[in-house]
Length: 331
Ligand code: GTR
Image 1 (cartoon, rainbow, N blue to C red):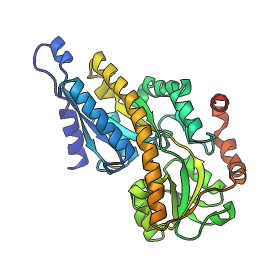
Image 2: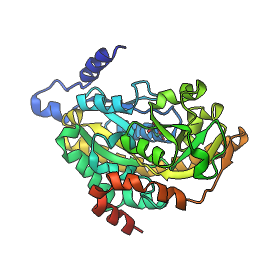
Image 3: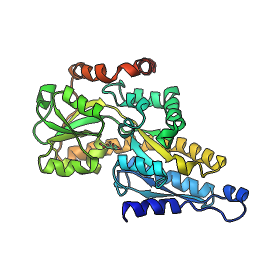
Image 4: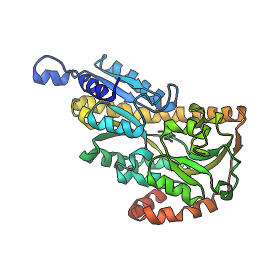
């Protein structure tokens, strides 16, 4: 389907009950299109599918979720645009992709901003997490309603040239980063050459030598078969970026307050379920990597890495100073 046709079809799926204006609203039927760059079985995809089953049961089939996994609707930038237009209802996206749209959340994209994944979880589960969800939703310009957070572990550097044990080993390697200037600057500060590329291009770009490596969490590395093109994987944990489930604002406004409340409640459950699935997937991925012969460096001395990203903090950090103090204070 051409993109334009898809957009039209998306608008047409918002079907309305036929009886009188008031009752029609109460009977809104909607096929909620959801999209993810990951394949079926990945924790984020599975969690949204489970949410769909609950939603369908609770509304006796009035509201259903139709999943488009595996980048079928494009990358995350495209997904955000489609949601803003109301052609896609639910987008599961990394905060990495949301940063350029909502500057407030870019604070979560700062290198080493969280002490570890548990710290990140405490932040998204607490007041700061709620506050940022509300900020995304309150700003009409985003065109998005933020439903909940998801786990994505930590991002780690992998490549097909050599094992990276210290920062010096990274020198001169071309490493794919997500399309956000903050990430390219981070890689450059660490001594590599950051290259912004779409997620869909990582595999072939590694094969053809356009890049030497990339960075991601173990489940993404395995789900995208990057182990077939990268032999060395180092747990640098330089970025711990949560993910978001967002709903198209245009479509959201077509739902009754009761349906909105139901979706919000199920999203909270989705966040908790995804976390359990996440830890299982992370363990399975690491086992698969070991079995497949990926050379894994499980620990590096983080001190020099943290020190090296100071220029990134100098460039982007000032406006987040207050928020970073609050993040640091979360136990
Ligand atoms: C994954 C994340 C995706 C996408 C991808 C990337 O970890 O789940 O949403 O951001 O990384 O590197 O583009």
